[in-house]
Length: 322
Length: 289
Image (cartoon, rainbow over the protein chains, first blue to last red):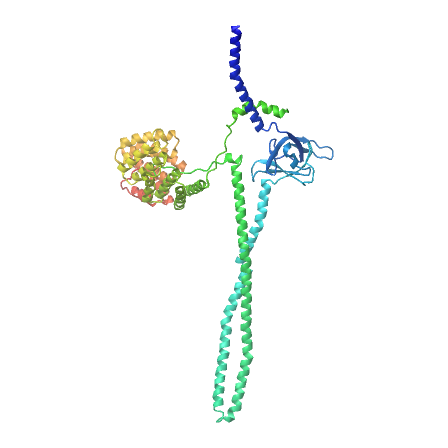
């Protein structure tokens, strides 16, 4: 009896000690299982592709940027006569989110940032369409690879560089529009003094003639006989002036019009260039920034980050016999 | 429960044990630190190419960035680099001022390793200016800042040997240089090993043992040629010339000094050209330091 009691007591003490430990383990296990989403109901859906390059088991599946599942299985579906083989990829989707993936949704292989982790993003289709069901298939397309992105960068850089090159070439060319305009302005400016001198000469001659006419008229009474001749001379000179002055004035007018036209043309060319330069610079800046982001991302990603030594201060090494 | 869940449950205990031990990603350096490092690295590249003026400009920029964030290690590293570049540009005052900023500053707490480097640089500059007492004090400070198995010990012993030689104590110089040679060989520091060999050669020559000096200088020359340092190659050739001359092999001495002259001319070092020309003319030889 006493032995039984002792045995019961020792059993009770063991139970008291072990039970909380077991309960603790169960709670921890349950928490971890819950964290691992082991009790979450999942629904498999499928996508088909020509190549599974870049897709591995376990990569996340996202809808609206939220992780709703993962790649569960990848298998090759052998081709038959006239039908080429394909890869069938099973996506394990948290059933809770299945309502957001309609039958016409599209899956796409992408990367987080430019060179981040691979993922499959599902873009939901029309809201009216019914949600995808268990084991059903949705459309799939590949996102752009780093190479394709780089090619796109190159393509967008090319026209900017071509524009810059063209503008610079035009500036430096002797037969370019800017250079031609400057030449014309220079020529016209050089011709202006000569036209001015001609006009001065004609006006001087006219003044002298008028003076002489005045003198002749003052002596008209005394030299009445010469009056007719003098008047004739005045008439001749006035006619001469009248004949020459319009052509000179016309020349000056033409020169002024040409200068105005040339200045306008120069202004237009300058305006065009001024408009293009900021665009070119802005485009160049954007491209350089993008390229820098790509390089920074690439350097920070596996496996490049293991190959590149982290930045550190350098010292020149002290030489005892400097 | 499907296979995936079973597998997950089996791994539960292991997962629990491993939880929290995942490798954390490396924290990215702040932008300002990265900028300072980039400028510093650019300066070092310029200095290694021999463009000391441009290197000094970049080190000063890096220094200002480090000062703006009070990064003591960065400040000290750039000041030490500046002192080296200034010395190579021939501006000894600026070189001394740069290291003095580390040694005299009481507000900032520079890492002891950097203080030792600064004190050693100060000793080297003072030895170059023939001030052995002041240099010895600076050397003591360097030793105090870097006790025990210090990476600078071989360099410190080389400077100590130079100072002993300057003070006319060949035995003390030999002891220090021998200690330095062992230390530098064990660290595989070839530049300092060549310095130790050259010092031992100079000590042997001063002690009237030119036959002992020649093989030491020849070994130093081998190393310096591998490292391609014109100033050191010049020193080795001068030492070899002086050793040959002291041994009475005048033809051999002329050959070595002629080679030294060619090296000095090619390197554009006017002082070295003048020195070797005076040696060739039979004037009293300079030290083999």
